[in-house]
Amino acid sequence: MTTEEHRGIRSYKEDRERYAGFYALSQQSENPEIRVAGRLAKFVSEARDTILTAHEEGRPFVNNNYCTAPEITEAMDIPWLMLYEAPFMAVSVEGLSDQIDETGAMGLGTDLCTAIRSSIYYVEKDLVPVPSAVIGFIFPCDGMPMLHQVIKHSKTWGHIPMFCPDPPYFNDDRSIDYFANELKKMTAFLEKETGAKLDMDRLREVVEESDRQYLLWQEYNELRRAVPCPHGYGLGGPMCFAVSQMFKVGHKDGTEWFQNLVDLTEEKVEKGIGAVEKEKIRLFWFDIMPSGFIFEFMPWLEEEFGAVVVMDMFGNHPYTTIDTSDEQEIWRGLAKRGLFDTPMVRQAMGPAEGFVDDLVRIVKDYQIDVVVWPGHMGHKETQGTFGIMREACRELGVPFMDIRMDIFDRRYTTPDQIKDKFARFFAGIGVG
Image 1: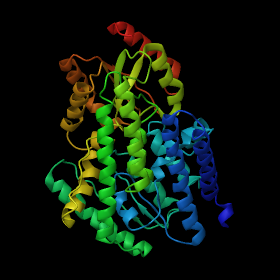
Image 2: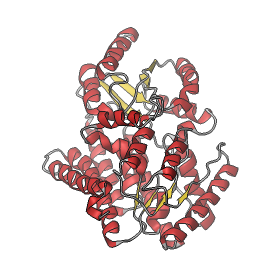
Image 3: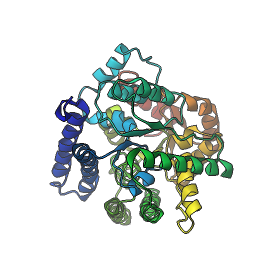
Image 4: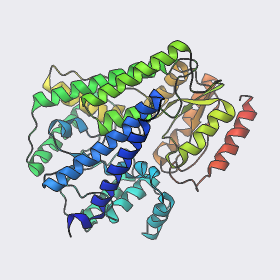
């Protein structure tokens, strides 16, 4: 099979041009916030180009993940892609519903998380370039190992060497030390399979630049506490996550992006300008945003009710900087970040105390009026915390809304049905 015949390569070339076009269009706007948001499209395009260039030059590239220390692959100068990003990026491509339907034709149960089903689809249909090695992402949920089983039985991916860092359950120092050792094993695996070598001085540089991004993100999140909130769903939040943990990990242009975001937001806060003309309801969306129909649903919330998503799961900032003065502390800091701080993993791994602590802190710090629990159908591991969250909100005196939806598939609970739920809920609690 030639390079041009592989669908994954063609898909990445199309993505590279598509996102480059999005970026170019955004830079024509007179609105500086649109230009800042548009730079994320540039970062995606550049990431695609990095993989394509490695492929064309016959150099190794790997699959890695946001919670398995991407700082390491960056420091080793190994191009990397994240297979699990596929369903999230697919929202910009027509035919997502058809792709979801095809996973059923492949024999995958509809009770399996749509993100995992879609990732399996991308492997089976050769829609992602085939890497030289795979770093597995087998946590936080029980469904993730199924994706890796599919990879091992795939005709095109089955021969690829794979290493899966083993995540411990408890959030304690022993777990950090254990996972730090797993990251060291992962690094040895990458060195063997790619020929690249890790230089600790280079890793220190990447981690320090990454820390600068996290500190600016924290500064930005402090600005989001303002009333009115300067941004809703459209800027910040998940974009901060994407820049710092997916597309510009430890890169200076990623840090520059954060600084621009902070500067623009400070100006809005100083002028008292909010995301909407008249903010009425401050929402905490305690899960992933509804990727499958976000641009249809979220503007409706803001325009119809003055309801602004002040904070969400991927916008949450529980991160701490890493002590780079000691080599072992670098490993421990990366382990802590991957196990305890990153979204989804933070919410679904370990005891429920951390989950509830985040909820209580955000409600208080951001003056939340309503906590929204989307209840994504794939997040079964967190369904057991539903009653705990509801009780915590009752004690805080904050209404708790439970939707039950599929954040990718608009047919599971349609946007109109969700809108009706919000309208009735707001009417019932006397807000809006």
